[in-house]
Length: 291
Length: 203
Image (cartoon, rainbow over all chains, first blue to last red; front, top):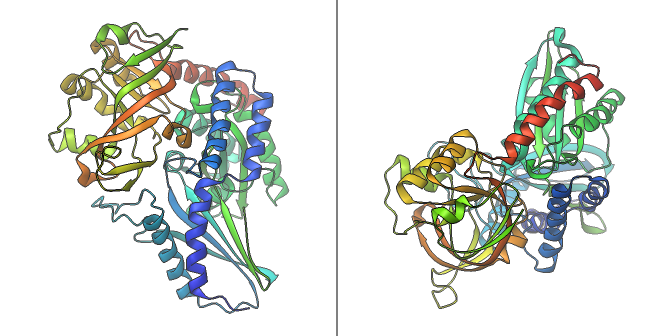
């Protein structure tokens, strides 16, 4: 199967706008679950406003949140695909800039030193483009994530040592959730990376934070940690927007990677309640849009 | 717990009446301000055209569309999506905003810290919490972008909005040392030991 970069450019543009406007069904269900279980009156009212906002965004075809985020595109290439990888990446960058210009969207992206904003939502190494490979024949998937900055600023890495054990990992997560408080726009998805190298650990935390609600870690030890930590963070009383309540996180998600005998790294990356994602899947039958 | 409808600007006495847990809706003028706006005002000494005395500022950088100037769009901008950003990054600007410009109300999400609380108490000001991430709803409270200054910093310009029934917003930090965030943080710190113990971890 062959993929035309011109089509990819158009899809990359559509995905950015779609992600900013339509919240995935699993997140909407997550809100319903939290709202049903919430016992704090202020928290219940805050959740109610968030649920109303999702409806207003859909009814007015507006963006859910003003933060257009750092654009991330996760590309998964299946087998038997004919793709010019370099052209594909360039097409994604053009699509991202086109969405910003044509909608128009706020450009949230600046040069890190000069702080100059060229009003395209692109720049050096932005959008972030990750490329993975799968064994699904004749399929290309592009997932778009506009990662909000309020929650991205809630990112933490610690190179724990083996003597800290899994206890060190758990303590780090709890302490960072308390430290982040309301700044990361709870209820959140707390992404936790355990193991790997420092960069892999941080990347896993991002993968975990942006995974669909209801999914679980493929590693059984990671899945067990997810269950334990989800209960623990929701016992802290931080609540939606840090104003108090039971609903601090939709879930804690964990990803794991093998690590070195001397290392025990843990990373936290947080996704806000506007946990936006959009996906396009290319197959020989055409292009499907979903989450 | 009382509700207040404010016509902006307000007096020191009006904001000193507010207590944590009260709610407020604003009508009239509201100014949008953000990291770069305040870095340029206070660190680079940039002058502004607007009189902020008695007014509210909101931590925002909106999505806007450039249009021809008209009665509906006096600044040449149509609001697309106006939301609120995390306030804590702008903590150090609370006191100069109040002392040098007479600002009485800061609207944001996630809360402000001790230096801001002290400024609110000594100078007479409050922090109103809006629900972050609910920008589609917030945009329906904005009537127009009336004017804009420091627009070379766009989207982090100094925005002058006209708003109607902007709220209800929660009084989260008042002028009497009250802070919802402090209370929640203290509670979380207390519950930390139990949370760790349930995980089989020593604090």
